[in-house]
Image 1 (cartoon, rainbow, N blue to C red):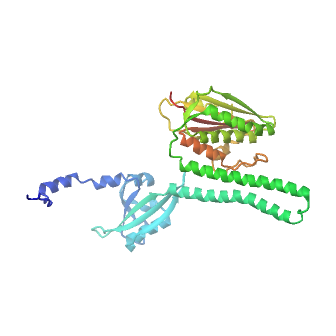
Image 2: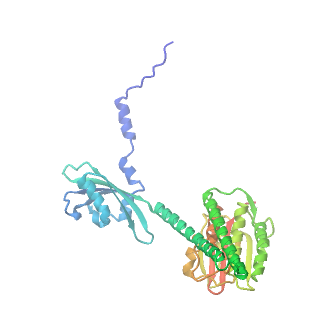
Image 3: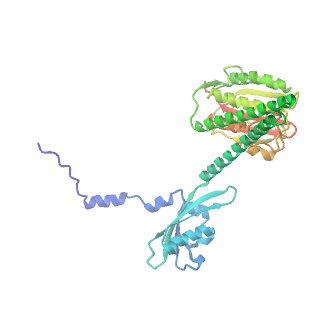
Length: 397
């Protein structure tokens, strides 16, 4: 039996013509690229105004406000290192690279790469310039550096205190029973602060690691909040603070969620309110169900400074379960509100008493709420108190 002929067939002129017709339009592809792309031409190495933009795609035209072909390059970009990289390709025949930052409402970081192209027929030198937006990666790198610096500082402070008291106890306070007892109490408090900080750091790390994974459990927010109230009532009583709860019926405020994380949200918000409440103050806790996003963030304090720290991606007709925690503490000035959910951020001049926080509680609340596709808002009036509202998509019946 003769095997089938597997040799490739030669392309016919008709096949080649059809392939040419089906070939993508490379100009259209470059136009649609998200990265700015420019082609620069120049003749005179000594005249900066001679560098002309002979092509710019849509992204480049929008970024640099380029009016048309032939525009001077220096009218679009004036950063010396970028112009130097362009010249390296135009007149040195080598690849160039530069990084620069643009100002404005939001700083943006750009990586610029240049390379020489074949000279034009009239002898003009030609170079390609491509820009890559590195804003997010630079911002993340800064955040990591800031995070490490802040974490190191927060751990170093109690560690230095512990070291100092240990040296004192080994020295002249060794035989002073009163001083020894007092110092040991302070050391225990500092060790507890370090333990809470490490716990919060680990918790935040786990939350961020799984933030993109939607939870799949069912949580009764009312039951979770009641558990937190039971746990915090003794602490609140020690501080002379009363917890006043207004809750939906059990089973009415159901969400799709991670119960342990919902407990963290409630614990952080209520614990924070207790710490900043005055003696004989009241912390009001509300759980309501079946509210729209607009209803969830309706103003509750006349004249308050208000800000949404996290906005959910809304689905048409979606309803929410709301957890609202209000205190009668010192309140927060408007200018401090945008930074409240930053790691380690504390409002200047405010102290939370002997039981210092780690500065990570609201960051944890924000990331958990984001994982649950919810929102987070704050209202505050200086001298009157603060209200935090977390709202999470309600489980459909």
